Length: 167
Image 1 (cartoon, rainbow, N blue to C red):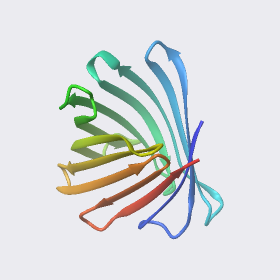
Image 2 (spheres, helix red, strand yellow):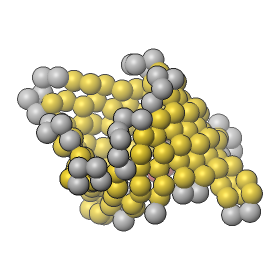
Image 3 (cartoon, one colour):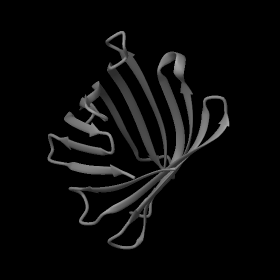
Image 4 (tube, one colour):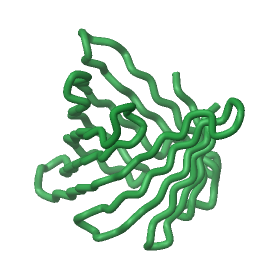
């Protein structure tokens, strides 16, 4: 199970996040996410989705549902495709999209983003870095991510930020 501690500009409290993938078939997983807000002592996010990975195409697709802390159930579909820029696979152009709909299938929210990622292995002894620069097309928001082994820092041009520490 992947667990992490998270905090960010959208919340006054620390959140504990957990994710687990359960294999269903070759390259198909049932993936569950849960997040507990330590400020209120209750779950603020629950999600279940089926993900299909296409390693030969460097792509994945997923479909599922999620429950947010605002007491709303929604359904989503998502996809991601990576295009290697260098032959060693350390620099990639990623294109990803997502569409969320409410439980009545009336309200729809879409996201589409393009990202350039650069993995730097052994930046220092036993320290790997990943730099990501992206642009969210629908909301016209550029963003940046710096990931170092267990730490991840995300920030975007609208002033939102978050920090994650993987346990």
